Length: 117
Length: 112
Image 1 (cartoon, chains in turn blue, red):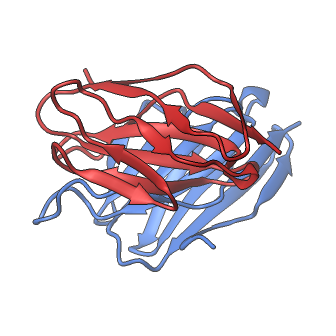
Image 2 (cartoon, chains in turn green, orange):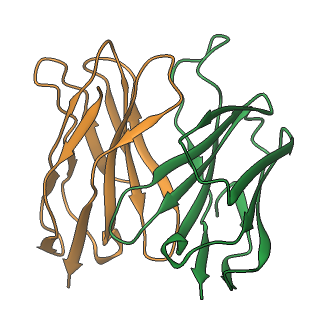
């Protein structure tokens, strides 16, 4: 069982739909991440939130919109996606690499498998 | 920039065989090193970690030693099981940075 929970596990949507992916962690972590993973590839970083503020955006298209309502929740809002956006979307959390923490590992959820029709 | 190089897969082994998956890295300073495992249909799980030179990370029979002189972090297991079949990612995190650099992953298949 993972301590980072992602919902839904699977999502099929059309190119004109709006949907959201959700991620929740109760590990007391103050950094949360979104990754995109294509088949047989490593995860690619999309966004990083530290202390509920967006700290890194890896030049992700605006059709992906992240949101961090509080320290335990992370959302990814999707709108007007393209077929090439079909992938496994992973959420992760960790202690931020500051305030006395050395580089702590990230803990991943099981992901949302997204298919764009 | 930082980079991680893993041996190409897939690696196919018989049950109870010895496993080595090579990993070398390039980074400035003193990164933390990790091995993650991804089972089919799941996310990444942290397998083991090492934060400084000569540290040995271990978990579930897997081991890896942080070798600064050879910039390596090879994953080993003395006797693999069918349940170890998965994709293994070597990764590093540079001090003070939130980005993790992943290797390309190595698929391991263990046959009975």
